[in-house]
Image (cartoon, rainbow, N blue to C red; front, side, top):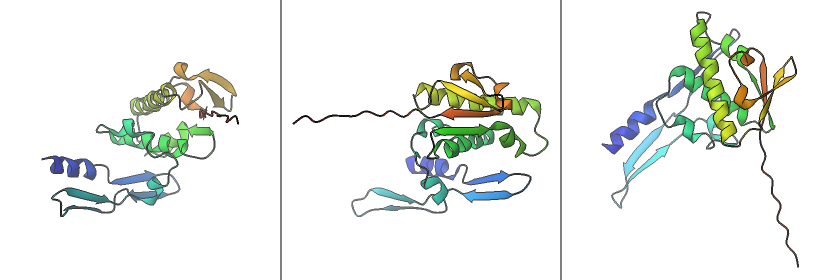
Length: 174
């Protein structure tokens, strides 16, 4: 039963697609999975994962986000957050309007608001987990807003977040 559950979870969202006005990209996230019984009578699994996902700098900081079944929009939002957050710069730039424009032209106002709310919800979680500084910069207006005050109106602009870096030094005295 556990093995069947594992295969069901593994087979969800295997293909990611990104449509824009200028391009189409399809990524098969798990190209191969091989499960077998070892000589010790233990089931072992070898799972290949797409290189683009494997090479993110912080692939496991976001595990809590993926522990439930996600809608397509939630998955796309989380993938965008992971992709941007995993850059080497502490400046994380989210152009939500460009993200929304990459969807098909038939996206309605309610769905846009739900997608923006999903961004806000996950950004607030990252802030609560102390992965982000408490203020965001709105561009091009150059206004700052506290993360806990973010709302969907703010996401009409480019949202710039700053990663929190916890640096501690230890000194050895001889």
